[in-house]
View 1: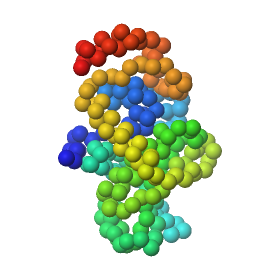
View 2 (view 1 turned 180 degrees about the vertical axis):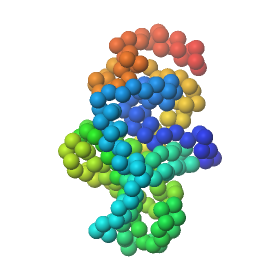
View 3 (view 1 turned 30 degrees about the vertical axis):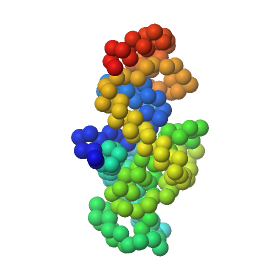
View 4 (view 1 turned 60 degrees about the vertical axis):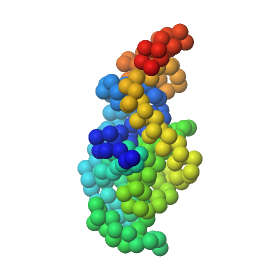
Amino acid sequence: MPYSDEDCIAISGLQHLAFCKRQWGIIHLEQEWAENFLTAEGRIMHERVDSGYQEFRKGVRQYSGLHIRSQELGLYGRMDVLEVEKTEGPFVDIPWIGLSGNWQLRPVEFKHGKPKNNDVDLVQLCAQALCLEEMTGLKVKEGSIYYCEIRRRNEFEFTDDIRERTIELAKEGHQLIESGILPYAEKGINCKACSLLEFCQPRVKQSEKLKNYYRELFG
């Protein structure tokens, strides 16, 4: 059964979940948030793309700040930029941006840092592609992430592997919401860059005995 609007979770949350389950739980279960230099820089960078501008140049149309969702996966969000370009593909109507014709779609995400050695950013981009496919019926094959630190785009293909990874994370997010249990604190390499370090307190090592107690207590 498709998810209702009330049950949908944020696409941006999948990036948090892929980065750290504990971080995701603190933000999306405990409703806590704290800003550091990195998050503040990212917020300022997104002010323009969130403003809802439109640009048309070199045969490519750009739309920012579009709201998207997937009821099948239970996801919603707001895109940084959607690029629409003429193609030889099928004719399609896209009423929510007022277009009809032969178009191909490309989600574009902006990140303030540099490319990472993991898939956390790509998961967020792929989730946008899956939403676009459900909303338009078009296959979205590729997307782009612009990294401000290196001042260029990285291009990505939405392979079967990253699609399956994104879908599984969406399912996991809904399962965590349903359980209401905050994931355990586990200190790792990502902790240094996390603005929620003080909320998380990963220095506290949880023994297997304590973990088993939580499992018995909360099921």
